Image (cartoon, rainbow over all chains, first blue to last red):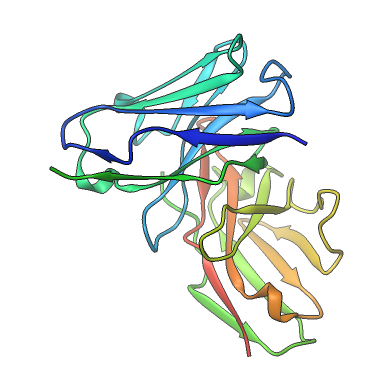
Length: 118
Length: 110
């Protein structure tokens, strides 16, 4: 059964760049799937950040496009999120998930809390 | 892109049925049959309940069903159970090849 696990720093300073890793186990990242990042501020709703195909093609949320880079390393079965110019508004739980087309995300990682604070 | 519109809260008694709406535009919900629904219990990751408007993944109870009319999608939960108490989110593909979620609906089982 495929599982995803996020990892990265829990605390990042304002204006810095966040770097998160999602490790895929129980299956290959090179499975003609899309791999997404989604975030959720405390007590608020979900926001799709963007996605990458194992071929390297990407799509980003227009509201975050200027600050987001998603990449993949198929040899490590991992994909990555970089989000630059952080502000307190970027404080959230960040999830990685497999995309199966449309708006279908399954499975999800357990999420990792990122706090932006000096 | 604007979040899809969901009611902030709904409630129902055990055994009853409830429906949660998700309203978008022709550029998302109304333009494509790519609406999904997710259930999220406190402190947990979202779980896929419905995809492509009406399809249930393997393992999801038949009590959960989806539909769409125009720019509004709906999730119906029949035979409410205590464990159904959770937050529910809709999501849609958009015309800009993006994805957008609803603001979420808190379901209370009375």
